[in-house]
Length: 230
Image (tube, rainbow, N blue to C red; front, side):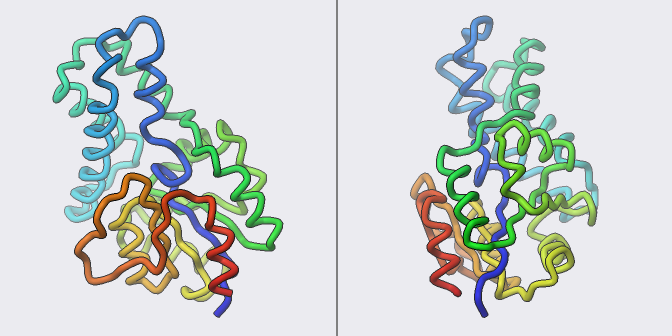
């Protein structure tokens, strides 16, 4: 079936999750972060995801803002940067206004000109996603922002992917699902979406039972993929 709906993961896919640490490192007042921000950003993201999986598996759900704070606290301690409450506050404030990747606005505008339905499907809480979307200035080219909070469990639980069909009334194979997380793209492929993995850092494909239909290095070619599958 032709692609009618293009759905994006948010963090790491549309929004640069390293931007908060990178920006804080360039500000006065946080000299200890200047050369350690890449390590902090990597550890923060890893724990944020790991805690979401563990909470999903154990049924101990908390919203993504709590998970984000917990991940940051672990990463700050792991990098020896946990002695500065001002740094913690600044990093968390910046997370509400993450920059989107440079190709995102034009890519979304092209999808809308092509008649695509567009949405975010994210672990993020509604308030976090609203802040990021408004900060990036991309709200006009999104039909909706879907959060796992409506089902109370994180991806890759199938109930999260169910939200797309419930919202748009589309079949699974009408959806191009785009994620920078290999595990997310793989799980979406297993669910029945046409999945595209945005592999910006050249990582190996995850050893899982499913593989994404497409692997791209950024989001520039996403409109072409929707046409190819139409």
